View 1: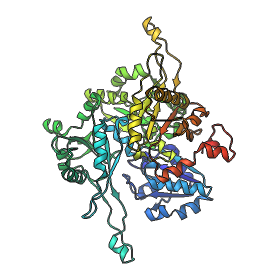
View 2: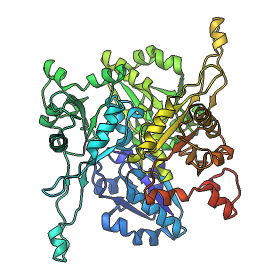
View 3: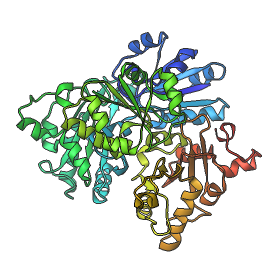
Length: 285
Length: 285
């Protein structure tokens, strides 16, 4: 039996009671460690559960042989930050289990897709979600631009998920046949805005403007140090949101309640009323 | 202090460990009882928490006076099925707290918006969510039709949330000045499809066709009796999904992995391989 268990976003206590009970009775516990990031490390989870938590990196999970072979006769808990169906890999794992006759049970949890509702924008007014990946000298995929344009034209908000690379193989090392991994890196709000403006500058369809477009930056959603700020792209790009994970929302048309809620996070107002600039729970809430 | 605590979708054990700890130390515990429905009643929650759980119906919550006045000096836990920001009412509650200087803390959980990922459709490929309300003789709002059309044109999936009326005042009784409440009612997948086809018949833009369009019906997501089925609108309309809450997804373009995952829930295949028609955990998983 394979249990896919969502951990939510913050720390070890965001697992559900049902999820925790399942982990405690499992024979093996794996933590998926490459599509997302929790506010706690694997050791904290181990000590909270009173169980060994094994790392499942990309190769291990996508290969899946070991997980499948264990799940045939044992109870395997596979822990996923957020909700289990936030990444395609886990769909693939379910399909492979079904093919081999292994039962799968899913224990849901919060994901960034619903937690962003905390900023005050209504979840049912979001259009298609976009993903921003790291630009390189030769690869600058910009399909997000058309999606944001389409959402904005329909008055819809756009959640921009920012790439997380926890354990990517170094390309040169692959060529040499000996795999070396890059250090973990995640796109920050500031980098994401640079990429957005880079594409705006080349496409020039006036989908954004760094001075006038008001957006929402969200850092470490669900962590004790969570930070939400609402301001122009320029203001957000200049702001120190602290460590990732970060997300960015480009709003569409605002209902008056949404506008009123966003004002709680308005950077300009906060500065005017004399609050200190800097990211902390005190500042951001 | 006001704690907005998501309960997730299934039963009392879908609350997070953090949420449960917060409930246990709260001075007052309210359950919001009109925007959604949990697989357990208020009494089961009370006995699981070892605490009185008070009902917060629409009038009580939208009035909010009592909650705000208690939260000024006491710890109030306000429990919401799914995630706290699934309904506009809760945004309003946050704003009123902020105005009165009451601190608000949010504990997230799964909502139907991410749990539907279990059917295999990728969450980032959903367009705008639509809501279907009960049609009456004189009121048949059909704005969902244009939204579904727009999503489908862009290749995106549409989640249709189906109206839940837990405690609606009877209009005649309102006129007479003495409020009487209607019995709870929820739109079923079958009713939703009738409404969709009614609008298709009058608008005739060929956004759906009951024989060819393959959709996903989802009943009681997160409950032990959860049921997911994939078939034509006609097949889904004829199928007994059991009691609500129900949801419906109208898919856009399918990635091959999505198509493969949906096949697990394909009604035609299931019939062909001789499974019994009827909704049960055994059938649906």
